[in-house]
Length: 167
Image (cartoon, rainbow, N blue to C red; front, side, top):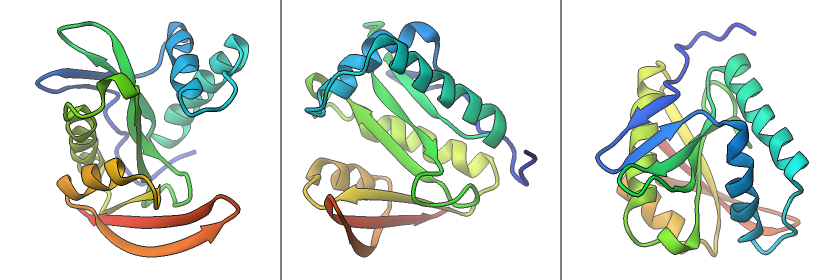
């Protein structure tokens, strides 16, 4: 599929973080991250399939979630990137999820800020983020990177807040 945008950069370094395209070996820590949501941990095979879908989507759409590794410690702490999600390829969503053990250190803000810059470099003009109304920490990250709350919708899982940033 040809898109009217420059593909997103899939290798990004910040002061403390390295964001990169997924490798098959990431399936091990990805399983643990998903399990922190309070859901059943995916099988290794299912985690590998999910990572394969991330990689395939990057090739097809020019955007992706990227794994996040702390540069000094060398450990994987989560992911951040662009997805179609509830939005569109033209105005994708920014998404991020980090292990609870690293919350409160500014890593999500640092990674999300790098992804906003990467989105600007693709030629896009707007990003979205949908967040459950209970997720105060995600709202703080979005506010720091200049997203504004736009509207609220409801689905089977409750209230969903749509946030937007014009680039």
